[in-house]
Image (cartoon, rainbow, N blue to C red):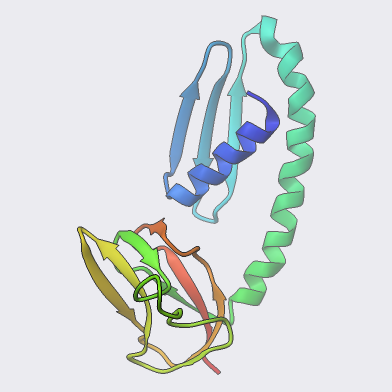
Length: 160
């Protein structure tokens, strides 16, 4: 397992919302834990004969992880002035009412209470997600036709 595969695994676990994942392969054991502040920690335990191979990957990963965390910290403080609209259900997120129609909202769209922001399909039912606040869409946090979890952030809204 190379560094890129490990990084992809970390991203997948972070998006899935799992708090801990353990992976054991022939000569590698990996535990990925996500904390309450979206921090991801990797612990690798490797038998002695495989250690020299893994040591080549470890310094590169350690250099990548802090760099990935530092830009996230300022972004989190900038986003704190915005209101996050979260998914009320588990399902598939859609930005359009149907494939041939325009999206409900774009970045920069002014919204008011009751405006439909997206549709989430669950169990073959399409549930319109309405805004509970007024403001302006600052960021769309989920790609179209992506699976979403309960309470997963969907949009950032500037209430001013």
